Image (cartoon, rainbow, N blue to C red; front, side):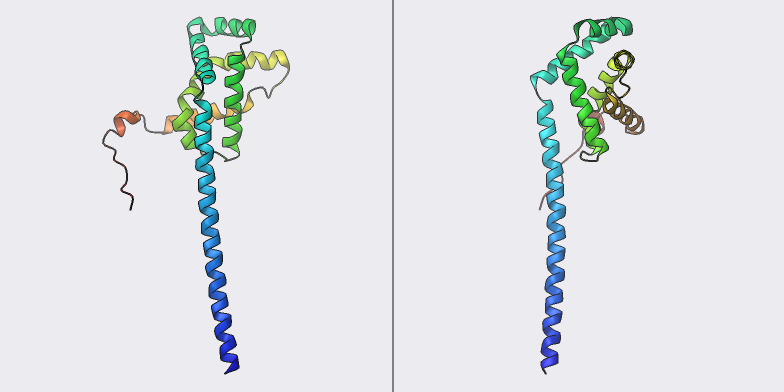
Length: 173
């Protein structure tokens, strides 16, 4: 009789322990998901600044100068707006590479600005690498732009406002 009681206690202990492990793993998974969600929200907010808007506007305005004119202006002015933008996109690239940020969500949120500005700044970055003797200058910005361009070429070609015009949120319940 005593051995049956011990057996029941062992079984109950094993079940309780197993349930604890399952609950712990579930909570860990939820925490990880929440952490990634919070990081993406923080990232979005950090890009919704006047400085970022000014930096994007400045870089896009360089398109009108052509490649040589843009490189000359960038070299002459050494605008802190360009530094702000390249550092932001450099950080974004490193975080995507480390899988701290989901590349698909980054593509959807920042793909346009990253690839557009990279297309404008690339000649200047390449000239700066030579001038500075620093081959790694803006390396993660370039890496991210190239990955996003690859993904964009494989993604849907119809803009979201057209492709998803009939979208409705999932019912929660």
